[in-house]
Image (tube, rainbow, N blue to C red):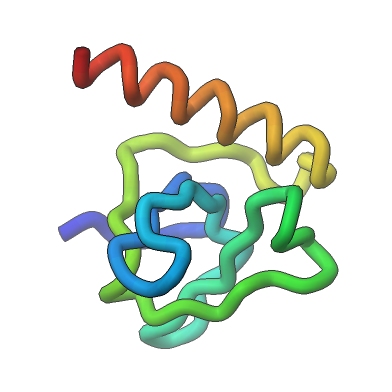
Length: 86
């Protein structure tokens, strides 16, 4: 299992947001705090159980990103993920 760190892109595996991509803002015990730059901005991250997300093998510098950069990063990451599967 991959150790979750701040800046990792993750895909939600459970809940009403299943399949949605986020970046981990920080890890707190068995929970991760997620942002997507649109509905979940850095000022109001989403708390989610770490068991309910699937981490990817990438790492972004979340401290240097604003919400617009997060949106652009996730859009590009999602695009490359779909190309790999095709």
